[in-house]
Image (tube, helix red, strand yellow):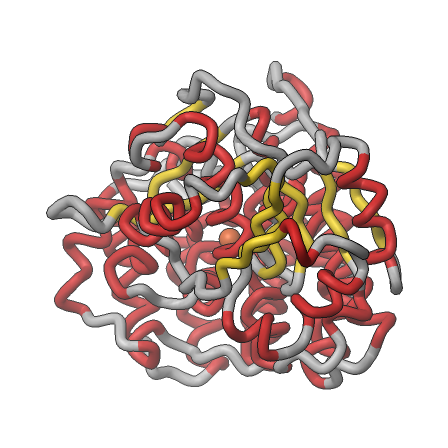
Length: 412
Ligand SMILES: [Fe+2]
């Protein structure tokens, strides 16, 4: 039970929320000084959408003392991160402004470590392994899923070894100094990006809420995020000019990002990081596909919490047993995944059954997620989840029926 865990809770990022909150970035940076140059880190899509320009325009006089790296790719790798560092290490950079989603913000954090410590980013996989304080990072969030803007981890794909995995650099100093959560900046973004990143946020919230490493504090953040995302994701993904829905989504994703930073995540992320590293697949979509299968496996470990999730998702659980309410919550998550247009199976995004063994090995050995997952998974459990998630071509009704059988069958 979470109330007995001895946990440290850290939330060190100043958040600026609501429409127009970009205007606060200037003062947020001023608190840390404007000495030296600033590096903007972003990607081509964000630059093309005019969001980088809006950020630069909000910072009068910044142009002369700024450099820009505008080509961050999804699933940033050791090689890519080191190359950006080599390109800009002699530019006198003293502050980093990330304008983007998870890949951009994680890249910015990794660069913050490299600029003051040198070396290669894989030297710092683990907790607080750097000697010098990383540069300050300021995050302007442009998706509704990563949570990295409020957290102290950066996820990097290991591409310089025989086995491709995702590893994390953690550090108390890696909390961005400030994060801008401005729904106005998101208006008109592709609905599919709201779906995929929003489902990543829902995954954080649910995995965080049922994590073995949570606390009452992280429960509060995660469960409320389930509620807000459940209410807003369909509105936001179907109409990305809905400013209310976009503001709710971006704030909820950061809310659970803080929860995730402190209470951890589970098997969805363990498996999805393995898939992301092996296939360079989009993180949010992989999570969204895996989520119902993992929840189906997990709910029996803590039916009460899964019943809470059902209620947060506005499932009418009146008169249901706790177990039935938990299963109804899992079913609702599956429906929501379909409603926002996420593919039903991993094979649709190119994941092959041939890789089940390697994916199982990577996920099974990732104690960060295995240890936090509410149910202790065996290799066979992970293999079964992957087999279903890759190969299922069944209707929702069949899937729901199969889910019940699997859940009951694996209760002991
Ligand atoms: Fe995630």
